[in-house]
Amino acid sequence: MDQPNPSLSRGERVVLPSRQRQQRLQVEGLWQRFGGNGAPWILQGIDLQLQERELVGLLGPSGCGKTSLLRLIVGFDRPCRGRVLLDGQEVSSPTWLRPPERRNIGMVFQDDALFPHLSVWDNACFGLGLGQDRSRAGWLLELVGLAGLAERYPHELSGGQRQRLALARALAPAPSLVLLDEPFSNLDVEVRLRLRSELPGVLACCGATGLMVTHDPEEALAICDRVAVLNGGHLEQCAQPRQLVEAPTTGFVASFVLQANLLPARRVDEQTVNTPLGLLRCLSNAAAVAPHEPLQVLLRPEQLQLKADSQGPGNVDCREFLGQVWLYRIRMGKLTLKLRQPLSNTLALHQRCVVSIDPVAELLLYPQRIPLIPV
Ligand code: ATP
Image (cartoon, rainbow, N blue to C red; front, side, top):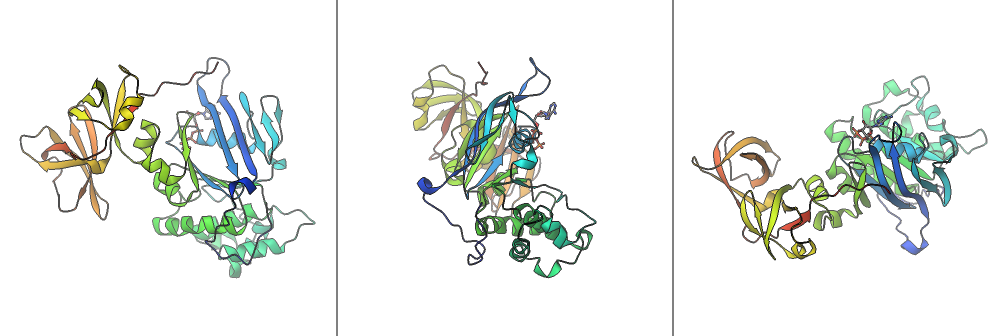
């Protein structure tokens, strides 16, 4: 990783043309399971590349394999199949494991994991070898806003300050790669939002490459250059945030990242499908799905309309105030739908209602996912 460039202020990203950038991390066809043959696969053929100076989010629900993937990258576990390369060199395969302490990887955990008996300064310098320049630790403490607190101990810092120190400590030895495991999840909302908006700038100032685990789509979309969406050990899509939102390639990405509804559907003709909400006319990608294949139709929460109706089939199960809009959860028989509505459309809890679809909504179709089995 580059030496810090103090002439760069926070928030500046140095974006090199991709042909000039080096691959920092290459994850190639990783399969992992615990407990030998017959045990379920935890990771299923993961491919992922990070170029230098990129911040990539690893996003997915609980249990999808995020931590298992991080452990393989750090070198705590050995993969069943596939390999990991750092700076072009193989560091993990089923037969070879470079130990974690020789991988030059920095780590930031949920719970800061600082040494309570060491001062802020000593914590920041912890990863530096005897001969290494300590001025970098001073520069990093300044960069993360802790310059005046070097003499304090971790218990004398706020939660946000401790996480800043954990980041400075991880960056001090100039690692090839920084892994951030839900770094903001233990912080209160205000501190979380401030720290997450500062993170890309701090990494950019150091020329650092980061992989950040999160289960919060908003967080990943807000600050990452690209986001890799993991589901059941399978990498569903890795793309820039806007691409994920505008063109999710699978139903899971659409439902998890956009918090959208997925309805089971059967094709009636080229552009019409039958769903629990009746016949719907779908968009262009309908043709890409083979005839008779079980389908899912994507309904974004803002594509649905809601009206109070005492005879209606729906029931308002839950209503959340999101500041600018309501988020409703409507139950219709076995179906539960999420709807975003303007504040002017206020329905009470347990009110009966009808749901309709915006007539100009562009509805996307997806095949139902077929599990991937290794050969
Ligand atoms: P979370 O967001 O809740 O931390 P995660 O996405 O990080 O979840 P993992 O911790 O990687 O998920 O776990 C993925 C799956 O692997 C889970 O079903 C988990 O129970 C299983 N698993 C993880 N480690 C082991 C292990 N050492 N032995 C057996 N199963 C394991």
